[in-house]
Every structure is written in structure tokens, then in C-alpha cells.
Image 1: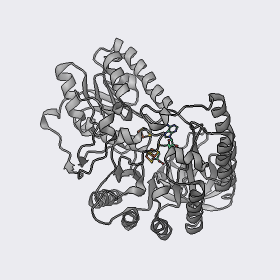
Image 2: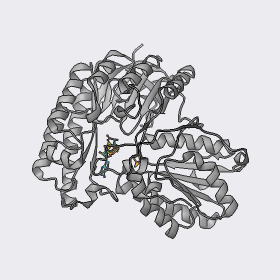
Image 3: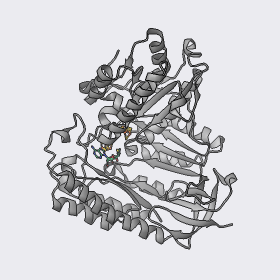
Image 4: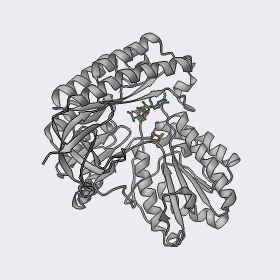
Length: 471
Ligand code: SAH
Ligand code: SF4
Ligand code: F3S
């Protein structure tokens, strides 16, 4: 049993990252034969992509996927720690699984992902959720076959969570969600330590994948007919900073663009590391999508300082406008937290004024949620829930106004759309995303799925567009 340890998780050593190839031990190849599985994923794209690896590993050892957890022999929760409600959702699901296990004694239950990296969570699983069969963390996905085997053999809870990131494992199998767009990890971990955020503890030190491994993966996707890649990292702009030779995000973006994959996206970008060269590369290559997620978190320089974001309102705005002025038709989205400890009405008004100035194309807005062991959790959380809710509401009114305004500007224009599938809005038709990540619904056949087509925008709503195919 290896339990998570915060002290270890906080450390940032100078050790070199060692690359290792994934290998499946022959001993495990049949352990899931005849059994079914269900993976429930919470959290960000990183977790979604981890689940793609997890599913493929489960299938390699004989399991088959089912779409209803009640029918599965193995249920795995890939969890998220970012806010309290993510926690509550996962524990709620665990409660349902406990009942299911009362009826289905052989049900195998696993927990992985960011919550598995938390000391408190694992302690709770160990003592209060003894029906959970196995737990592994974000640094040892590749140990999944071993842990299932261990639990089946010994009938004891198998818990293995590394707090210090191990080697960088390449070549894990992957079961992609679809065959036209793909996630590609480029950097793991985060060294920014924003004071409210748990990610640096759950995902460890910043580690970049090699250029060769990334480009090989993208080239294979191109060969397989993929239309879009999203380069993933908690802060993709820090890509390459851990190399001892000069190769950074702008170089990688350029090399990925040159593979001629029709669409390149990347997320997330911390404003601090966004270089002018990156902006130039994005502007230069038509297949790098003009869509940038640039989380601001707050419009108050005082709160930004307390958050440890290392930029001010002014320097953020300078970067924002530089991007807007250099990349034609760029859409910028953001994340904003309201109710950080000590946030006054004046601070919040700075956020509102920034939102008015930036007129974002999309924004994810959150109420601050204290996270175990983070520096902000030690500050007095002195904004009442009522105030936090009121601020969220007022902020949403401002950002929503601009989503609609920006969408309305597109009416009458023809946009390129990667068709994703049949829409679920009740009417016959398809949906897809524009270059700038806007959801668009239009009439069309399902054989368009996975193709990039021209669609003329006919009307705009706050969250989506309607259109018709433009031949
Ligand atoms: N690496 C990304 C963020 C990943 S987390 C970045 O730095 O941009 C996604 C978003 O969750 C963050 O941008 C932030 O707005 C929000 N978030 C993170 N920790 C939070 C907390 N403790 N409470 C509320 N929101 C939080
Ligand atoms: Fe969290 Fe900040 Fe890292 Fe983003 S950059 S993952 S908000 S610590
Ligand atoms: Fe959540 Fe972990 Fe992603 S905390 S947002 S799943 S990195």
C-alpha cells in the first residue's frame, strides 16, 4: 500500500525526467476476460484523456465497455479535486456504488484521478469506504492492470498513489472518444502554485513530453484521418521549460501545424508565459485555430497578487489586446473566480470592468472553493455565500451579454465547422464547432460527421448558433 503524502507532492526537485515505454505483463492479459467495465470521468480534458488510456488498458486485459454502470462488473471513478462540488459528486456516486455492491457482491470498484492524490480522501476511503477495491493516482495510470490483479488475488484494498511523479510513460494504449478529433498531452503537472489551486499537488511537477513523441503521435493521427488535435497541459505555454535545450511552445505549435492536421488547438495558456513569438506563430498558420483560452481569474490586481498569478490587470489587458490585434478574428475565452478570501465589492467591480472591456467569447465562472492544504485555504474566507452568489450572478449577466453580442456578429457569415454528430435539441440536424469553438446547429446528414464543412450562420443565441450548409 502506498498512500499520498502532501509534503512529497509539494516538492519540486531537479531530477531529470526519465522516459519509459509502457509494457503489459503477460500475467495480466486475461484478468478481465468475460467481464465488463464502466469508467465515469469528472474534471478537465486531462482527465478525459487519461480515461481514454484507462479504457484501452482495461480492454487489453479482457474487459469490454458497457454504457450503464449498473451493468458493469468493474466501475472506475476518475475523479477531480478542483472544487468542493466535484468532490461531492464523486462521493455521491460512491454511495450509489456501495448500494449496488450490496446486491452484486463481485462488483469491482476503483477510484483514480486527482482526488486519489489527496491524503484526506484516501484516508476516508481506507476507513469509511472499505468496499472500494483499488485506488491509484495520476502518476501511475500504467499500474492499473497490476492493481486489479493484486486486489483479485488478495481480496484486500489495493492502494497505490505516488506523490512524487515517476517516469514519463510513453506508448500507453488509447481508446479515443471519436475518430476525428484527439487530445494529445504535451506537458504534465504544474509549477505555478496559484494559491487557491490544488492541481500542482495532484498532478505534480511540470514535465514536458519530447518533441519526437508528440510529433509522432500527431503524424499518426493525421494518417488515420483525424481533423483536429488539442494539445493538452495545465499550462501549455510552459512547454519545454524543463528541457536543457531551447525548444518551446512556439516551436512545438509550428511543428504541429506543419504536420498539416487541419485544426490545432491547445489549452490551457497561463497569461504569464504567453510570448509574442507564440502570438506570431498562431497568426501565421491558418490551421492553428484562432481560439485562445486565457484565464484571468480576477480583474483586481490586489486579488491577483493574493492568488499568486504574477500578472496585474494592466499587464493582462496588454496581452489580451496584443492577441486581439495580431490574430485575425480571434476568440478569447477565460476562467474567473469570484469570492476569493478578502475580495471586496471594489475588487469585484474591477472584475466586472475587465469583463466589460474584454467582451469574452466564452467564460467559465466559479465561486471560490477552499482546497485542502493550499495557501489560500489558510486565509479567512470572509466573503459570505450570499455575496459570492450575488457576484457570480452579476458577473454572469455581463459575460453572457457579450457571448450573445459576439455570436450576433457572425449572422450572415459563412464559417468552417467540424461536424461532430447528430444534435440533441429535438430537431433533426447536426452540430459542430467553428474555428473559434462556437457550437452551431444546422440541418444535415449524419454522414457529415468528422468532416469540415462551410455553414452559413442564420441566427445567434447566447450559447450557440444556428446555420445552414453553404455549398
Ligand atoms: N491550468 C489552468 C486551470 C485549470 S483549473 C489555468 O491555470 O488556467 C480550471 C479553473 O478552475 C481555473 O482556471 C480556475 O478558474 C478554477 N479553479 C481552480 N481552483 C479553484 C478553486 N479553489 N475554487 C474555485 N475555482 C477554482
Ligand atoms: Fe492551478 Fe494555477 Fe496551475 Fe492553473 S496555473 S493549474 S490555476 S496552479
Ligand atoms: Fe480536476 Fe485534476 Fe483536472 S483537479 S480539473 S481533474 S487536473
